[in-house]
Image 1 (cartoon, rainbow, N blue to C red):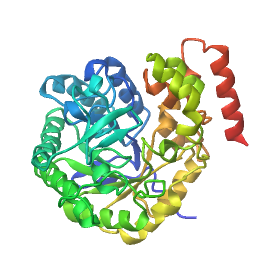
Image 2 (spheres, rainbow, N blue to C red; image 1 turned 90 degrees about the horizontal axis):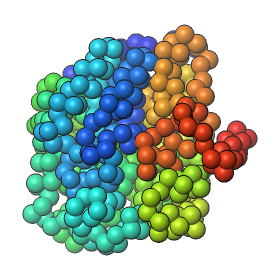
Image 3 (cartoon, helix red, strand yellow; image 1 turned 90 degrees about the vertical axis):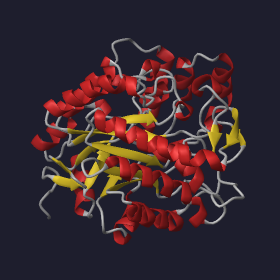
Length: 411
């Protein structure tokens, strides 16, 4: 059996992490007013104190039009001091800190982003639901520059790395995917054309990052449904990202607006989700059609590993970060032994911020996440939180739903 590299240092571009663990950019929903809060600082500080190599703040919009939630970060100069407090707190614990930068594209609403949502193409998005305006060609260069400007703000705030979100059906992904890109100009049609906006963004990002800030890119290996990007095209995207200067790729999959549980796996607890919603018509709409809108995709440990191994075989120039279904040290060691330089975890660290330290002490450590997805159902309205650590008592109907889903997940 190979000796574990889990607790050895690893490099991403100019950055060296103390071990091979990264807190994934799982949306915390802890930023009321689109600015950092003490709650956000305290959570990332707890993960840093828990032994993580690098924690990732999620997910910051590069423009106001890129906001999909009213409790999401929006990168602008006035939030830099608050972000600096967070990065200083993480650094005091010996961990590095990254921030995920992106634009939600068509997955917003005028009430949140202040205008008709924009995307790769004009259309209607049932996710919000809302009409969407396709970006004009003359808007693409300024949008790409907004990514670069956000990288500069991140550097000013003390972040060691940035993670550019090019997956999950957000704006870059909307240009890449034939499902959402119906453009007739040079930014639509062939894959070469669909990658042009991504290339523009990466050019601005790499100029802004300089030689001091590490650049990771999260991308889809598959969109997760017929008519979306599949693995053959995604491999070409990965190779282009290497050429564009990316220093590590985070290998994910799924479309939040079309195949959300392909991203997260398991069942969405619809009763819990609608319990926290404040918009009455959305609450009832999701309650009536939620099971159909958000179909279950069974959870299993390391659920993206088979696809990720294909990328590992063809992408050898830069580190690859595995994410998806890691809850136990044994499986993490297996993934690292398969040739991945780093692993990301989200729900495991929400359930147990000190899980990395426990893995160091216990070779068979497993976190206590039971995969009910309560944290995700709650996230859309309140902060992301594990039901096992709530101060309040859950209503009996929600507890019953969670108990049933945990029972099904254990079978």
